[in-house]
Amino acid sequence: MLRMLEALHVGDDSLVLEIGTGTGFSTALLCHRLSPEHVLTVEVDPQLAGAAEARLNLLGWRPAVRVGDGELGSVGTRRFGALIATCAMPDIPPAWLTQTRPRRCWWCRSWCG
Image 1 (cartoon, rainbow, N blue to C red):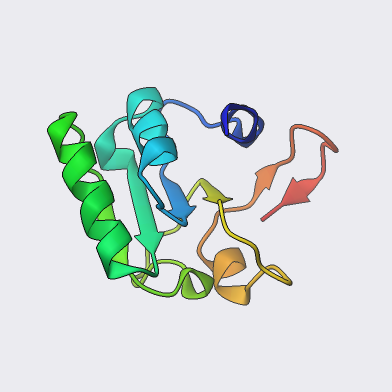
Image 2 (cartoon, rainbow, N blue to C red):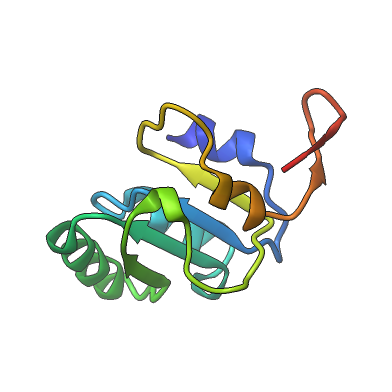
């Protein structure tokens, strides 16, 4: 998980969309790196989302935790600086592309997103 977050290359003011909250572990790491206001996480399972949100709140983190289909990303018009998915997808969902801002890739130096 740490390597995935390092590869994300987020800046201090990045708005991050996380797909697949799970236990909330990676969400907590993102909150620590950025701030809870810069993290929105989506989980398909309402029980997992509720348990993760409770854990995060106990730690003092209050990111936006949403229950929904991660393939659809986040409902609304916000565009994120980065997206991280901890779930499997056969292809990159179109919603992920429209909900992220283009940025220069740190690895290939081309424009991604």
